[in-house]
Amino acid sequence: METLMMRGKAVADAYREKIAAKIAVAKGQGKEVSLAVVLVGDDPASGVYTGRLVKMAESLGVNAKTIVLPAESTQEQVIAEITKLNMDESITGILPMMPMPKHINGDAIGAALAPNKDVDCLNPLNAGDLYMGRTAWAPCTPRACMATLKHYNIELSGKNVVVVGRSNVVGKPVALLLLQENATVTICHSRTVDIASHLQKADIIVAAVGIPEFVKPEMVKDGVVIVDVGINSVGDKLVGDVAETVAEKASAFTPVPGGIGVVSNMMVMDMLSRNL
Ligand code: NAP
Image (cartoon, rainbow, N blue to C red; front, side):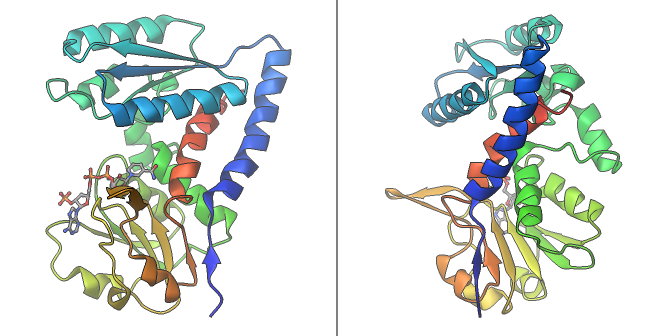
């Protein structure tokens, strides 16, 4: 069986062209597009991610700035910073880096964002619109999954899709987006009994578990389509939530690294440029 490797770069490149063109036109009309990333504390992984995001934004002509607040900042101080950015007309989009330090409630930070500047769908009003099926504006990683499936012409209507994971940033919103595309969606999580029995019926599996190689070949049927959202550090390697050997049974799969992660950041830029 021919297996399609759904690389993220091709998806991101297709978006890059469209987004860069929109931004160039807007700039020609005197409009600025700008992203503010709010980073609380000095978590190295968040720092690396922020750096990549800023570089990508700048390569598209977006003005990007990072506001770094000390780890001991109070929730009120972070909200005050967000409120300033909400009111700053030169700022198009705001992205608070999650997770926040433990003493700060991430939900409260999301709720403080002006809904029209909330590029990662953290505000409950935006999440509510997604829940109601009024919009496909969702957090960047679920949108990256959908953009990848669309780019590689994977049919969704009527397909049995199993999503493993139900977080607010990946599992739940990707399930809603799949439902909008008329898939029949099953969501599995840590209390699901006999996950393999669900996975074996799946035409498409979206794995967002955070456990290295959680999905194994014997759990899936031949010809399955795999979207592997997982990014796990194992020794000096990055591995997904799906074992590499599953690819031998799949008709299409996203590699890790080089799959969904590559598309996710571009989705932030897509959100920033949506109203141009
Ligand atoms: P998370 O918040 O930790 O959620 C993990 C989900 O997996 C939870 O719903 C949990 O179930 C479920 N789960 C945990 N153990 C399980 C088990 N043994 N069997 C079945 N389900 C289980 O993680 P997340 O933020 O959604 O991220 C998931 C993965 O995606 C991680 O590897 C993360 O690094 C990666 N990620 C990638 C990107 C990207 O751009 N590619 C972006 C974000 C995240 P319960 O709800 O029952 O606890």
